[in-house]
Length: 298
Image (cartoon, rainbow, N blue to C red; front, side, top):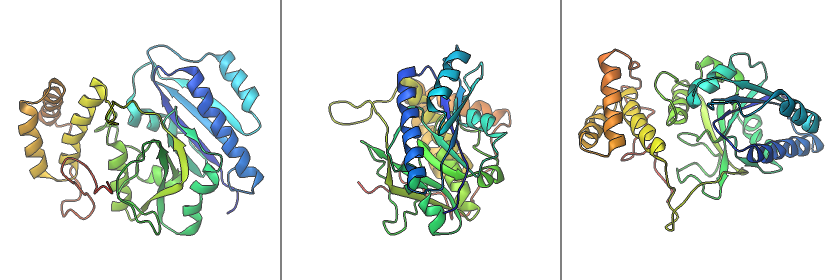
């Protein structure tokens, strides 16, 4: 595959600098390996968008990291001054993106050495690929995918690569609807609605730490519980699942504090005309499985 340019974007929110540096080191190493083996990626622009209450970086630290990693990376940092959430933050940073490809990732992920070599293969292998998702470790997402070609119903944006023109064509993530959760599911479904493929590249590993209980279950924060409940209502509305929306409303009316607040916010948006126009009325794309968004392998 011929040389391609790539920008990697991530949203910061009160992150530990040592964790960010470990992630950056892994990107640096993956670019180095790609270049060594003649891969399409030999340099990456890394863009940090900081949604923290106070800046995590100063000019000195940015300069030091650029000096340390400058052979294969160029770091850019922007302090937003407000909590943007993922969708709005990614869209803000993307506005001046001019690279061939765009990588959205969580700031704490650790890339495997052959990450770029593997992640770019689907774009070379077949046409119409709109997004490639890496495999997360130690907890892989259980959603189904085609083991022959990796095609899947949606991709988790903990670490993905997207052609820049495709992201721009779709207008980016839906920041009007989704603050934190389900922006990736929605974007994946819109990709497919516009004729693009979402591919799971199981040979490209990234380490993504999770907090789990003694049963191996992920432990969400109160904020995560709230925003996932809010997103569930908005997904059911946007993707024309009126039956599920009615069911969720009934559950949330007497549910947890976070669920009740999410329902109140949904009703406020509806009353003020802030809900987006529903899509996929004939249900060709959206796949709701219970309260999830795809069939799972396990």
